[in-house]
Each structure stands twice: as C-alpha cells, then as structure tokens.
Length: 343
Ligand code: AHG
Ligand code: MN
Ligand code: MN
Image 1 (cartoon, helix red, strand yellow):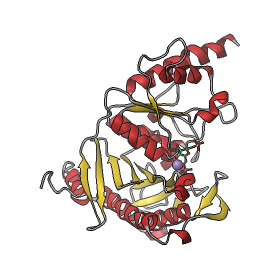
Image 2 (cartoon, rainbow, N blue to C red; image 1 turned 45 degrees about the vertical axis):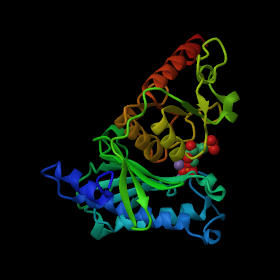
Image 3 (tube, rainbow, N blue to C red; image 1 turned 120 degrees about the vertical axis):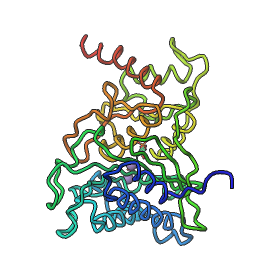
Image 4 (cartoon, helix red, strand yellow; image 1 turned 135 degrees about the vertical axis):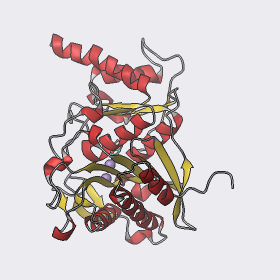
C-alpha cells in the first residue's frame, strides 16, 4: 500500500488530538459536513439524474434560476447541520435570512456558511460542480440561537474552510489553518482517502481564469493586467499564461491551486462589487489559498481582512499565486485609483 490508509474521519480526529482542550465538537461538525457531501455526491452521480436536473421554475435570493440539485443540496446541508447540535445557525446562498437551529440544538458553538451547490449553470452539462463551506466560532453567548453578528466576522476569524468538488472524481479539500489537505472519495467503500497532503500552490503561474465576455465592463487596470498575461500590449509576458475558465468557482480554483494560476472575478461597471459572495465563496477560498501559499484580494485589500456588513454581500475576487495577485493590485493602483484621483 503506497500511501498510509488515511481516511478523512481518521484525519479529522488526528487533528483534534493536536488540541489538548478540544471538546470534539468541531470534529463532529466536520464529519457531518463530510457525510452530507457523500449524500449529495450520490445524487450528482445518480443515473436517474433526469428527475433531479432541470429548473424548478423558482429563482433564489440572488435572482438566479434554481435547479433542483441546488435545492436538494441546500435542504440537505441545512437539515443535517441544524440537528447536529454543534451549529447554532447557518447562512446559505439559497436562503435570504440566516437559518437558526431549533431550540434544543442551538447550543452549538459554531456557525456554518454555505454555497451548497457552486457552478449551478454547469449542472446539465455534466461539468464539475461543488459545495463550499466556511466555519466560524459564534461570538454570541451559547444557549441562544445564532445571530447575524456571528456571521459578520472577517474571514481571518474562520476556524475552517473547504469545498467538495464533484468532478471526474469527488474530492474534499479543506483547511483548519494547518495546511490544505485533499481527500479523494472511494465510492466502493464510501470513504474519503487522503490523496493530496499539504497542498502548496506551485510558485510559477500557468493559468489565468476569467470570463472575458465582461472585457468592456472592466476597469483599465484589470484590462491591462489581463492583456499582460495574454501576452499582448506593452507589458506582455514573455511566456503568456494559458486561459482556462470552467465557470464553476470550485473547479477553476481547484485547478489553479494545483497547477499554479490566478482566478479573477472583477467588479464591472454594472456590478461594481462583482458576482461572487464574500461569506461563502471568497472567504473560504481565500483561507484555503493562503494556507496553500497564495493569496486573495478584492483589488486593494486582502479578502480575509474585509469586515462583512451583510450576509450575501459580494466582492471582486482576485485569487492565486502571490506574485500575480500583487501584480494585479499594482495595475489597479496605477490605472484605476490614479484615474479616480485625476477625474
Ligand atoms: P453559484 O452556482 O453558486 O451561483 O456560483 C456560480 C459562480 C461561480 O461558481 C463561478 O465562478 C461564477 O458564478 C461564474 O460566473 P459567470 O457565469 O458570470 O462567469
Ligand atoms: Mn457559487
Ligand atoms: Mn451556489
């Protein structure tokens, strides 16, 4: 047996042993999330997908068409977490308000922020999709339902963040601040096995990921940076990066973290804050990339230092290799902030 047979379950409890005063509550919460992902995976891979795909005809709080798999993933995560006893409240992309745990379950010490199904527009095309989660310790006293203030903490306060990518194989990737670890799901035994220990972003970027259809709506700084990595214009890179864009944040992020690259979802003239949500997309990815040796910015500050003001607030997201993100911030400073000063 090449690598030690390390299951996600065993890894989570080993991590717990590193903290002498751990109560085991966090470990149990993590394992509830792991179990939920296995159930979602079964639906994603189920042959009879025809009854789960397609539109529900509803739209979610973001005004986006909801596909049945979104709903299923959302309902499952909320149902399992609210009765876990470790989670006093949840925030989900699919729910306008935070979801409190019932009276006899709101003693939990943690809050969980969820993108239950990321990359929904790709569901019907059998392209990789994912689930994203972020976990913070509550700041309000135990024994009462969780409150908004428990969620509006900077990403720096997260105790854990991760995602499950339902792709050619299903993987769980998460961090508790002690490195990023990847587990590949073996459906024949229903277990995640450690396959990528301590993931580090390669030093050299190979890829840039951005939806270039918004080109005309970007700032000058973003346009000039993208020209640079494409190998055009006065600052052209000698060896341009490869353009890759899947349209599922989880899949684009996962590939860039493993291969080295930068992902951009800039603000535009129409949506200055961009599309991605801070609490359950940008923050968890920012904690992961930082623990893998990269960084994440909104163009002028580290994503993890942003003080959230509302549950579904959006943020521009530039994430990946440190030097590429720094270069992009430099371009924004030189062409956008200067422009703002001159105008
Ligand atoms: P979700 O399916 O959870 O709404 O997320 C979709 C997001 C993200 O996964 C992806 O990076 C982005 O939408 C793609 O947006 P565009 O289609 O505008 O490029
Ligand atoms: Mn998403
Ligand atoms: Mn989603």
